[in-house]
Length: 271
Image (cartoon, rainbow, N blue to C red; front, side, top):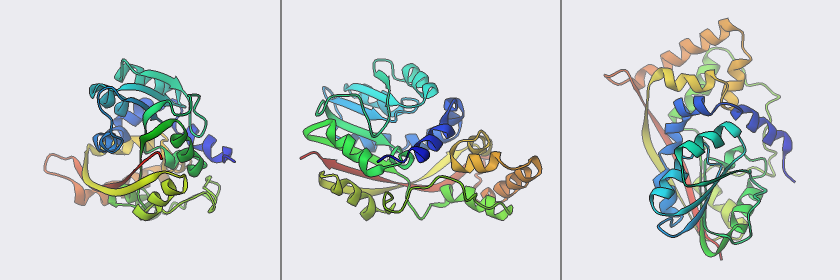
């Protein structure tokens, strides 16, 4: 059974925020896209579904490889962006774990940082498996836990400013969650009946303008954005000061930030 409270909360964090996402988290999430497509075996002539396409970054790259692409997302502003950024893709409104497409209709399914926004990750993986033909491939990414410095920056800044994480934020129940480690992520795919499961950790330093990186949570994106929006102006200013202080060691000579980060990339074959 899908955790509708969790799903509704996650979708509310992205509603109407495609532009803010592109300014802040979009470039970060784009980094693993080529590796994701490689892991899914995406090339010319392959039929691919990009689930949770966001602004269409992965879909556009798949089109560039000569693939036939269906791109789906639950958020209308993201769908508008995907139609602009990935002309030639069949862009549709849909979300895990219910994709209105035929069983076995694709050579590959990819989901870039999507399962972390799904109330039942196991059901999400099972749906990705369903839509891919036998012998086809599934490739997915999530953020690891413990968090790398980039992702940990927000929580550290909130704590330093004296802001506690609200108890009412929706969370996955333990029986639906999985360890955000290579073994835990691989286990999620294996439990769905996928074969030849492989999970690797990608590491890089994300370069961003400090104002752009602050803009995402300031616009209400993600759980951190919700916490920030709930604070009175004086507290938000205190969080911003802590953010600037904690980000200072990562500042480059040109004023940009180079924040160490990582992602888990798991892939498998449909038996």
